[in-house]
Length: 230
Image (cartoon, rainbow, N blue to C red; front, side):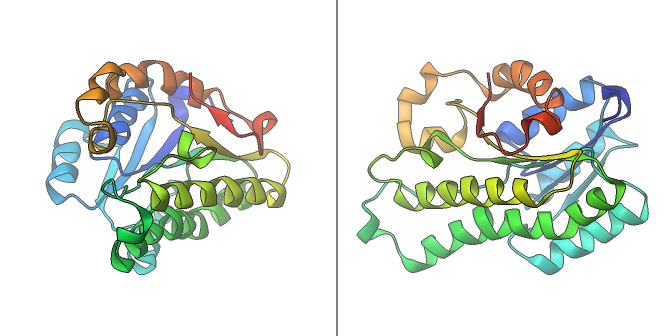
């Protein structure tokens, strides 16, 4: 793995929450940041603030054609990530499973699971061809445990755990795939579940000051390990 100053880091769901905080942290660490989001306004803001050599694009990870076109543009520029972070995710509004519509369940699966697969499918072959790189798929405490009223989200994050650990067994030596529980952070997603209780937890920016160095320290020795951010 290259020194941090030369690393290329790709982050999905980059326009808000943990994604935005990580983008700031990786940029400040000297990395080139590649990112995507469905938010046109959020991507425009990132482009204005970050400038070159960073690259941000409006992409819906649930759409494989969108992801494929984005990946093609990046790879044409030789922008193969050293660290790929699948962060983009949705959560359901608190409700018993039988009250969650099929459409809402499908939207979570499309972004949280299929979106992760789309990015892996389009980006990871170039990392394999180069022979190095770390893939971090964001899981959750609810990918290793359960709580009432968030069953759809739990289902997607348990899927990420299995998907990532299986991927780890398929990668060549010198690479790693890691399911990461980021911990409990005061983001819009947590506020939707915990309401005012979310304020008791660190902000995304506070979290990133610890998480970014931790993420940059991951390597082949961590392949397949279900980890938790500090």
